[in-house]
Length: 424
Ligand SMILES: *Cc1c(COP(=O)(O)O)cnc(C)c1O
Image (tube, rainbow, N blue to C red; front, top):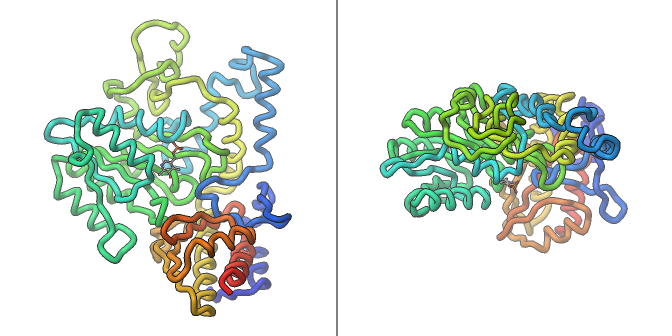
């Protein structure tokens, strides 16, 4: 592509973009009465304009039907969670029976660990990425302690090599092989939240299985962002949140994947609740937990309907577009953003942007993280004032996510202009 740093060029790209019509389906936040350049969809996706009507429908059913809404609402609450399953399953590459939406992400990770981290005296280690998202670090630490292990002994991190920012697959595989039968669980982020690196989940899964370990992923930054094939890859379990790339609203519900071979195994240990009980007999209210088949057997509580209603609004858009088209646009947006950053860096002596995101398009989604050599947080603060909503990480990293559902090429052009204005 012959990129150009011009408004005409960016507008032409938008005109030729088959997905440009989607931007208008979302509310774009404003800063000083001007549409923001919203690059934080990796943290909190934007609100679809239809979200309110989905929630309104449930408020109406509750007002008009009361408890009858469980079975006679427009979408009965009794199995409301099921309407979220199929689109989530497509997004992560799973069978419907392998997916359920429930609770929050970190809660779900603990529930899954209860089933899949079963350490013994000789096999208790957890292999993970260095600098995992803090909530994941706390899950690992507290799970190790819960089972009576010292986290310093149990948790083994694989880090980037000196002078590098991303983790080499060969180093992950070498560590898995080195520790072999000591490893109970390989637990990894699908996409690292800081660098945006997409890991080779298929290869990591194969490697973990070859030494007899279980393999699970946190897909918070992967779901709705990159291509996933959890079923075919043979992943044991995974969980993701719905409020980042899936645009379901702050703190909203989480998706869970449990591979079919485990979903039908009622002998797995689990922390049970009535909503995970065999559906046909749920209301017998008797002793003796019998799990529902599939991922639904991990449910605890009846579904939080308003959150799920909001989640539906955005899933409807994913259903219409599909991941392949989104990924194709995402690659163009990211390439344009990288080009603009390079162009700006050429014009100014006082900056040198070094991307810590992999250069290979296969190893990244729609996030670019740059180290600002020679610049500090003042630059980020200036950008924020000018309406660029990005994400700052100490000591000097800006994370930006041009999201194919609602970001435009013009957004990236405008970002470039605002960056220039903030540097001089
Ligand atoms: C965003 C994110 C979380 C957040 O967890 P919640 O339980 O939804 O607050 C956890 N893990 C990762 C990797 C994340 O990116």
